[in-house]
Amino acid sequence: MAENRKVVVACTGNTCRSPMAAHLLRHALAAEEEPLNTLEVVSAGVSAFAGDPPSENAVRALGKVGLDLSPHRSRRFAPELAEGAGVIFVMTEAHRQIIRERFPDIKAPLLLFRELMGGHNAPEVPDPFGGTLTDYIDTRDSLAEAIPSVLRWLREAT
Image (tube, rainbow, N blue to C red; front, side, top):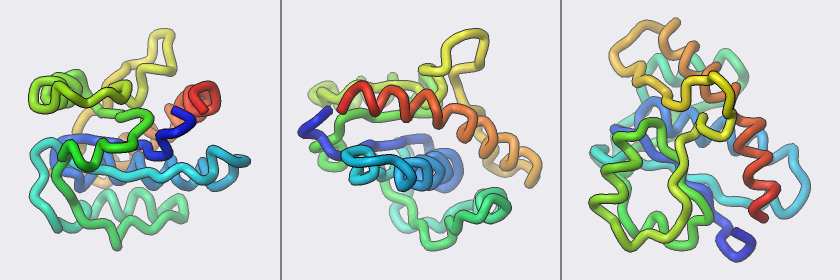
């Protein structure tokens, strides 16, 4: 991953999980030393409409930990986005399968955001879309729980 300076995080609509994961990961990377703190982190959705604002509850859930998601606007996953990516993290096996089928030429590793945790941890991140603020906070916490294992992987890959 040394020459690939981008981390892509993908979900379905790019209004909940992947932007929350990207913001949490950017925040964690900012506290790291080079080269980790210089990685670019972007998010996208495999079925996203470009320009949609984040879910209101996603903004609230991240706001409770001091992160501002409100400027985010959704974007659709495209091969150009994956150019230069050292890794692509997805939320579910379905996302991984969709990307593999639609974009078979992508060479970056395609990993579930939580799969690196190992053990008996659920590797997928359920979609909170349309749920309560508690659902979004649970999603935020599920993503945050995976950050140390993602950082460990990125350290080893760079």
